[in-house]
Every structure is written in C-alpha cells, then in structure tokens.
Length: 154
Image 1 (cartoon, helix red, strand yellow):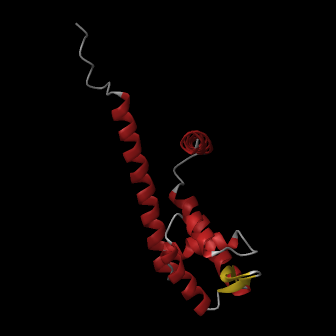
Image 2 (cartoon, helix red, strand yellow):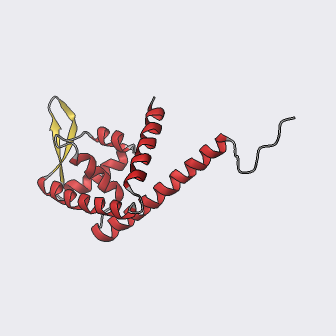
Image 3 (cartoon, helix red, strand yellow):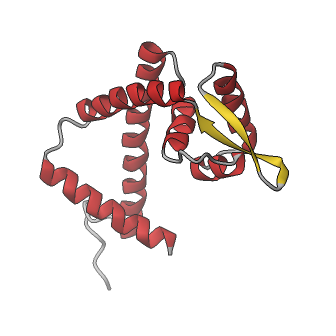
C-alpha cells in the first residue's frame, strides 16, 4: 500500500496550475496599473501605446496584418487605432509599390516624438512597479521565463 501524499506535496500538475494563476495575477496587476497611468497621465489606451510601439520599432512601416500578428489582435482592432493616429497626424499610410490594396503604416515625426516621450514614462512606471525586485531576482526570472518561452515556441 502506497502512503498518501502529504498535504504540502501537491502533484506537479497542481503546482503548474498554481504557477499559471500566479503569472496571470502578476501580469494582470502590472497591466492594470499601466492602463490606469496611460489613461490618467497621457489620455492614451494600452492598445494605442502597443500599436505605436510596434510602429516605432519598424521605421520602414508595417502592414496592418503585420501589426495584428505582432500584437496578436484582429485587424479590426488595429484599424480603428491606426485611423485615429492618422487623423491626429501621428501616423500615415504609405502605398506599397506593386500592391494597390496594401499600405504600410508609419509614425510621423510628431508620432515618433510623442511616442518616445510616452515610452520614457512607461519605462519609469515599470521601473517603479517592479522596484521591489533586485538584480538577482530579475536575472533569475528572465532566465526562467526565457526557458519557458523557448519550450512553448518549440
């Protein structure tokens, strides 16, 4: 007869579930605070920030489908944001030679300037929110999350 597991020795599947829930909770709390600060201090939404971030990393511009793929959202979600950015003079659509239906979206110089300003704020918020972690905590978490990401992408 096998002895019953001790109460503090949950099966590994339960521990994986517990880890998943803790990752969700931590991510959700950080995201909630970033959303709140973007609204309060910049009058922006997180999806708007994310679209502008994708465009800032690709100065040659991105097709709408590329933005959607990068952000893992539908084209419809991106279209509304890009429409507003172009209306505000922060982005522009540039025709793709040889494809009359396709456009690349690029940030304008004003869009680049404004995004850089908000990205600096965003970085300082993340620094503040994660201020309770020391360099060893950060390094260990990054290594473990990289390992998890590599495993999930295989």
